[in-house]
Length: 235
Ligand code: SF4
Image 1 (spheres, helix red, strand yellow):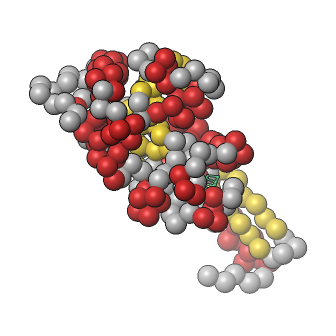
Image 2 (image 1 turned 45 degrees about the vertical axis):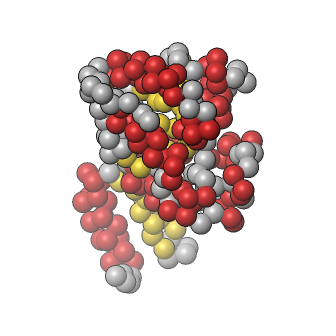
């Protein structure tokens, strides 16, 4: 739509502000010299879809140069339980989805073991783009990307966050304590209960850890008031 002339522009602004204020617009920015009017919605700050749209074009750190897809995370925007891992791997980068492949399959079984589905929870990572060669995330990448996770938590408002693996647990809790000592207990993360447990990829290499994860998930289920279905166990 092209609007020409000062009077038409004034009318358009008046009409737009009147009709859109109730629809979530809280700010109108006008650049008269550039003859350009920008209406800024607060969608990106208040909805998961809006935030996803913002993150999908993020070039905030060097990982934007090497990623195939941004992996924003997926699941229910009203999830009571949120899983947070470290960063996307090769398959996640390829598909643009979190926790796919063998480790993802095991996470799905872990979720189902407490009577939920992937659609009931939200699954994400601290970093939204894959570090090349699956190297550890760099401090500057964590610093730039972490606000997106904080926004996800603010929007979803989960009752429990489950930190998957050493990296996620240590970064979220700001500690260097080994995951073997962190796991199995609830901590406070920005007012939300956080349970660290082993990463599914670790369980694929060390099946003895599955018993510990099962104990951790039982505590999570109890905290959420879930009734654990019979004979559902991870394999
Ligand atoms: S890792 Fe995070 S900060 Fe870096 S480009 Fe991806 S979304 Fe942006």
